[in-house]
Image (tube, rainbow, N blue to C red):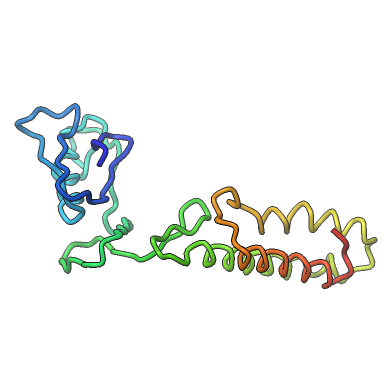
Length: 182
């Protein structure tokens, strides 16, 4: 587990790992070793950082505020702690238009999601594809708006045969839909 600091607040548990938070005096610092206590520890230590506050105060100018109702936590631990806190524990979430998950099939889920988003975008542009425009213009529309939607984030994908089949099936479907050759 890497030490917590202002830029990286991690809640992933590493068994037996106890780290002190840098920049905080040892008397104010707590050891963080489990994901269940990480959020509580961060909430406790937020007022000690000069750039962060958890509540509005007339004496302190508002800086960074954590909205705990919008905060989501995700853990790879199968045991879930039931608590009355306002935070939500999720299995997966979308960050920067990429599906984040600890699921073994997250790669295929992300590719299926990208294929669905591409077809949704295709149907938004259906007037272009139903018009009497030339095939060259339709090809440019596909290459400039649909293929980037399909391949966004592909640098992080694990390319298996099944994944490649899903991508090529979508591409062939786009080509077939209005006789557009890529």
